[in-house]
Length: 168
Image (cartoon, rainbow, N blue to C red; front, side, top):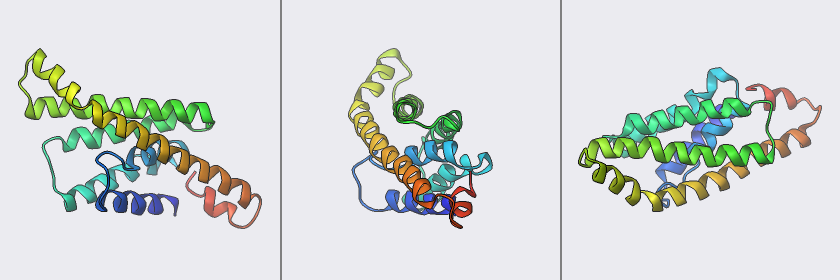
């Protein structure tokens, strides 16, 4: 159930008007890896991206983008059982760096001269997007992980515990 909600939220966030790169997909990928069953962890961010890219439009860097989110979900798997503020914060920063490095490598390959100057130019022009990605990851990760931990406390030993933790 949580996986479906995450996919729906991720899709809607990508489809409604938003600041470029200020979307919850990386946070969802990190959360899916850390909190969902590993058979769902990779599929949640990939389904968000595939479905939304089919609607928004495919692009030359799609495999790098999708790959970056898959790697972020794998990063989240390292957080499983070790979720705390410091680890989530660190994972959020690493996720932003991974996304920046992987996707801009794809942008360089697709759109820039294959020179050292083209490489530097590509990454330098992406710095403003990196800042937004980092802030978005931090905000959405705090909301996702925080809400999940609060829900676990409120649910406690009630009949809803199985629903909340069914994907874990």
